[in-house]
Image (cartoon, rainbow, N blue to C red; front, side):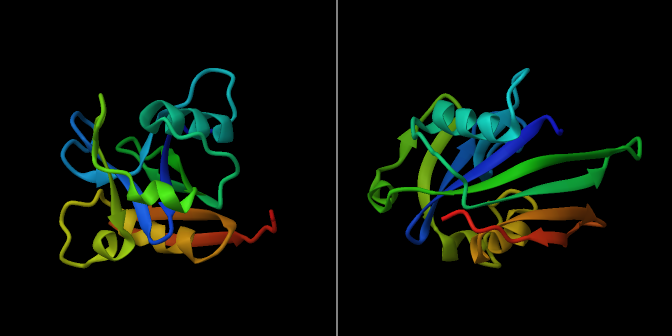
Length: 157
């Protein structure tokens, strides 16, 4: 199990994004998330992080993935990524300042725009896959590119 997760909440055609005030990835838009606590499962940790950073209680994820890469010691590292679908009315909530940074609902087209330089690295490569359909995904980050390695489509609803 990897130490970190990043979670995206989708409401209609908007995604809740966080512009972080501190490292890592300070000053760019990304999902919410953080470190797992001892003894919790990856799903439990993702739900806890979402609640701590947004005040929103999520249940079952829509899709999730694991992104792996080689660190500077050539050891495998990675993180868990989640997409949760939430109540459509949440996507109309105003911008909110939190201890982590600024939370705002961003249009998916804005996030994915090729000229948008304010989005965290890799997000525009794996988020479209998570949005496409329910499933569990394995991605590998190699030479600056996120490659989809494996898909497990699962019926949850």
